[in-house]
Length: 270
Ligand code: 8IG
Image (cartoon, rainbow, N blue to C red; front, side):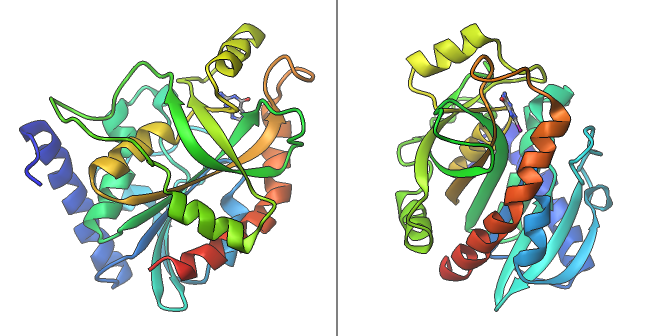
């Protein structure tokens, strides 16, 4: 696939990151990338055997993390022969570094050989039956950031963006898993109750500040995508006011269960 010049420049930077990744890990090719969102970090230890771990700033073109609870490290994991590239922490659009900083990890994963990416997040839920700690498979998204992570006239089809094959695989492992539609806001503020009313009206059931832009770039590069959200709070106006510490705590409690799910599905993917 020939990229336009702007995209090719981003891919070249990602290739440089992937080259350093190979040097630091001794792993020629990774198979599956996993981006762990807020609350998901404890899940990382359950994925497999850690081969190497380092701050993402040891790779060229990665920026330092800005938020507490977002570790900003990269780990290479051997999951019974599946080579997993784990990003503990991500760059968010609200950090103001632009869409290319947000999606650099995805491009690096593709340059490192990954054919599949698992994107996770902590988010708010609009279904009142989803108590904090409920995992939800992302079936589709609504990009409310007002920006695109693609450059130039690069027309990318987004049907079945979140692989129905991988969602079915997850349901075989855990039949209680339900689907949701993830609405990405820029943040960093949480939504107003009126904005949650809008999301409900347009068919969203999850709200967060990540994932959609990463999934778009992953698809543009031909990766198969699994998206999993961890509902850590009811969306604004559905319960009390939102508190960042409570949000992190609810995520931590459920992360162990999520680690088990990811560990199993990762081994079945390749
Ligand atoms: I964790 O309720 C978490 N992240 N936009 N709204 C948005 N992001 C979130 C929320 C939420 N909870």
